[in-house]
Amino acid sequence: ESSGLSFQVLDCIVLCCQITPGKTGYSRYLVCPVLPVIPSRSYKVIFFSLFSIFPQFSFKKDVKCQELCTKVYTKGKPEDKNMLDFLKRGMQLNYQHHWIVDNMPVTWCYDVEDSQKYCNPGFPIGCLVTTDGRAKDACVINSEFNKKNTFYIFNHVAIKITYHNGEGEGWRGARLVAATLEPKSIKNADAEKPTCEGLPMEVPGEFDSDLKITYTYSVTFEENNDIKWASRWDYILVSMPHTNIQWFSIMNSLVIVLFLSGMVAMIMLRTLHKDIARYNQVDQEDAQEESGWKQVHGDVFRPPRKGMLLSVFLGQGTQIFIMTFITLFLACLGFLSPANRGALMTCSVVLWVLLGTPAGYVSSRLYKTFGGEKWKTNVLLTALLCPGIVFADFFLMNLILWVEGSSAAIPFGTLVAILALWFGISVPLTFVGAYFGFKKPAIEQPVRTNQIPRQIPEQSFFTKPVPGIVMGGILPFGCIFIQLFFILNSIWSHQMYYMFGFLFLVFIILLITCSEATILLCYFHLCAEDYHWWWRSFLTSGFTAVYLFVYAVHYFFSKLQIVGAASTILYFGYTSIMVLIFFLFTGTIGFFACFWFVNKIYSVVKVD
Figure 1 (cartoon, helix red, strand yellow):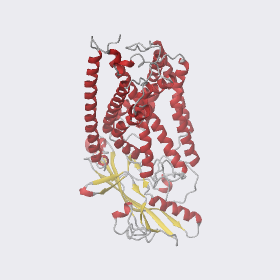
Figure 2 (cartoon, rainbow, N blue to C red; figure 1 turned 90 degrees about the vertical axis):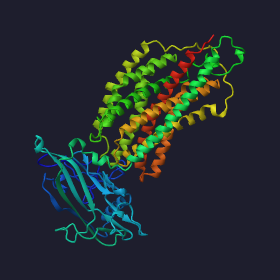
Figure 3 (cartoon, rainbow, N blue to C red; figure 1 turned 90 degrees about the horizontal axis):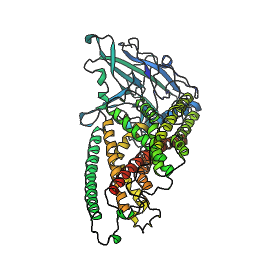
Figure 4 (tube, one colour; figure 1 turned 180 degrees about the vertical axis):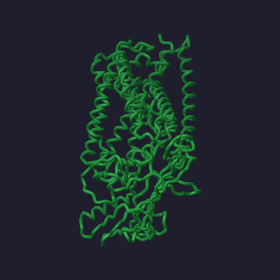
């Protein structure tokens, strides 16, 4: 706007001003130093109006070394000691400020190796030099940060706002195209008239004397008509440090998976061709002594145990699969860019709500194929079981956020709206899909099922159910674990994720790998005359979710520094939702691939 710029933060704790813990408020215009919460590390989150802590920026009016506020920590006051300890803890754990201007992150750009510039969408509140003189984190940028057992707080920020002027292009006004800053640690001798020059602001490791910290800022506006508003994110995305790693890792995974897929396809096609040719010979000798997958043709389509639960899982998995595909496709086309905050999650929820019909149709059609008759129970479980588990988990996590007083907690009205979408749209659409599914005839099988079940011979170790299921999830997980690292970073470490093209490619690779791994193992089990493939095909690829959970546990202990029971419960609560969704997603892929494969091979073989 011409009168001023709007500032917003998502989750913050004011560091510089006197605050009263527990009191919360909200203002449209907000600027304050922020500590990311994962989500809200048991700390009270306080919002202050812009006008009470930060003067509103006037467009094209530079500000030089303006005092924001001065905070005095008095020795002997327990509350001051607690607040200073909290500040030191934040610097020790490398807590970051995350500021937003005009829906863009305020970035800290600095030079790294090979003369490259890296723009970090956050900047630390300070840094630490340890008792043995080792500079940690941001303390390596300045040789003056060298005093042992000392914290250095960044109490001054030099903000530069770059804008594109439209006067020469036929439109009025200006558009913000970049917002950067440089954090500095400065000890101002006179708080009333700060100079923003001098020695760094030291915070001793031992609180043995009064401490006064003055927070200041500077603002400069710069016109740059070479940067278009549509490409204003480029300077952030181009400087991301893991771009080259992404390219190398994705190409490496792609080559390995394609090579493996080619080998699997070649072996399967050649072996199956020989099997089918041998089985279809007119003048077979010793036909009764043959063994292999043809021998179980009378039992291979015998309905599975717990067919109700399997059909419900497959219905929900189909819903999740279609939702994921459409969401990633739209993200690849640029409709869900990082600039549109919350667009990805909003799109996913809306699609999930609208895709109740495929879930009901698939679940009911398969349940009818399994010979089930309790259609009312099937429809209700399809509409309520898995969404109910996710909502209950989400509600418990939100309850913890409410108790902790975090601004990340979803308001009660929003939860009611989610329930209204679920019961008002998703559930009726599921019933509609189930109606059409039960009206359709059961899926016709290529061979008849014998009345008496065939005895399954003794199985070797590798053809037993559990080893096969455990091995089946290794290959799909190997395709996704690199992307999983970046996704977890974007969720828990406040790093932007924007490579949806890579993610869509990994999605396709995962689809192919889950299908081929499940088909391959299914073929081995049928050759061993074990015809219990329904649940095994679902669990083989679905076991990838178990590896995902193990990796999430490893990430928690190796990458994150979360303290407190509440934050730990939140992490594993949200991770459980991810694991359940991924389990249904991958399991459904494996089942339908195996279902197609089994129907195909038994439809081309001659059976007396």
